[in-house]
Image (cartoon, rainbow, N blue to C red; front, side, top):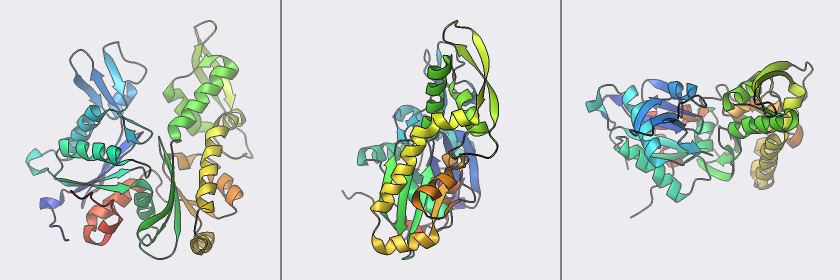
Length: 343
């Protein structure tokens, strides 16, 4: 079945992520990359801010304004807010509203249930889409990383997002084996917060933990250990306090979630058919997603699996670029989309 192209190339792809939402518009590429956060005034139910502006408000809002993240673990947890956020982003991209009603391809985690997929589609339709198609994130990440998904040769992708880690082995336009783990960048941040609270009786905010992870977080022993200064609230005195944290200590704090990611990669390899396992030894594993930027994670996975591991050229945008390719070349790639339920 062929589909006519929408007027003025307004079809779009959305990477609706736990941490960030990216929007790709046909013929224009990625036009929006903003945090998946909405600030709502609880007294009036009015949206105060969306995206980057709303993220600045996390942990800093007065009582009547709450900063909501409508997705957790890659799944919509607040449909109403997710739909309003999506509508805001679409209107931000398409300023001339009468030209909207695009077809939309939305990337979701591979472990998403039919009910959760319906919620994503509902959010897309409510936000003004004419048709909504679903693509699984690991498939989109593989396409965006330039892997030959439609060929008989096996490819393996590990996509570490804000809320989930997707591990998939792909061949002939389909996912042969997949593991969706509800561990991602957010869990790494939470592990740092929990460690500092337990070991130093210091309470950190989400944004401070994220900064520590980016600055000195590692998954593998590094030649030069680094330190950073952190500020938080002393749980004993209740007063602000500053201390120094080392990369070695942060690595120790991150050990549990990192081990869970490594374990899920090993499990997926165990489930891989032997014919494809041979391809993977040659092709290796491709890492994508924001969590893939954790220093030393490629070394850690290579050591655990004995396979070559490389970082995708553009790990933060792989899923959005792959979903966008489906919009650009719909007829050739529609076989990789999740089939529409009949009825």
